[in-house]
Length: 187
Image: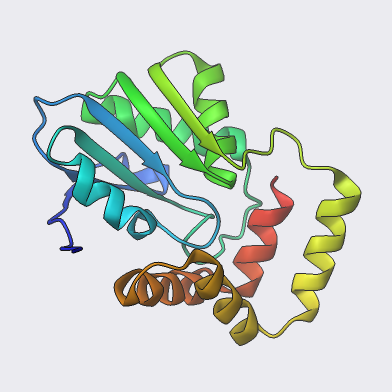
């Protein structure tokens, strides 16, 4: 049965656009969980509950992937750089990483930077460089769909219990359609 872990929001550099949520004891091996587009750290609630007993879990909310759109285009490499800076400020320079979708692309960027040592890397649905025509078609279709329908589709795709579904809906509404399209274009 899921019981939401009690997070600590760690101080990240103010200009990073990243909120670091931490769970578990700092003396345990660090595990970084990186979300994709549209849903922040709460995507990982069940994994946080499981792993916070044995790991120091770090689950960021990455600006541009889960928060309202900024006026500047999203750049996955810059998100990775900001995440590395935030992790260093937390003292997490050697860790295991699990990431999904656009978060997997951020994890690859983090690995390429080389200033954070990744001991283990698990990626689900990464896109190192999405095929332009397929991505353009996906963006065009999403642009034509009402925002409320996009939120419903995202909640259904994420699955999980009512707590995760509610978090998915809240995060997708916060990102908004403009933010979703901008994040997709960054891939």
